Length: 120
Image 1 (cartoon, rainbow, N blue to C red):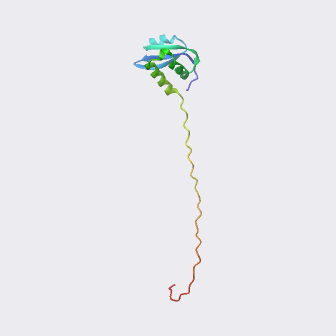
Image 2 (cartoon, helix red, strand yellow):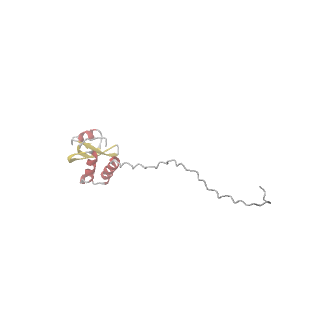
Image 3 (spheres, rainbow, N blue to C red):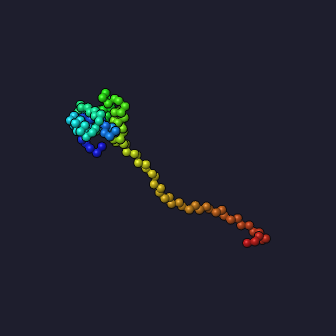
């Protein structure tokens, strides 16, 4: 995550038909969300200050968020925001040029025969 902010309140709300996970440090956030047109606002006080990802993981275990919509919204948030393990770089073996020595076959000594009739 790009931020180190901590939050004491977390939950979900619906705006324009889409549910999203919400974070705050005060339950007064409900008024701001309602004023902005949010519906089905459900926030919960957390026991301690936590990061967004930790807060979402806590929400999964709370009874207020046990319905299918809340679980799907929170799970999707967690999947999107969980840091991905860096892919192990594939180490490619560098092709080093091999200098091949020319293969020289030893020639067998020529047999000399003295045939008078043989052409050169």
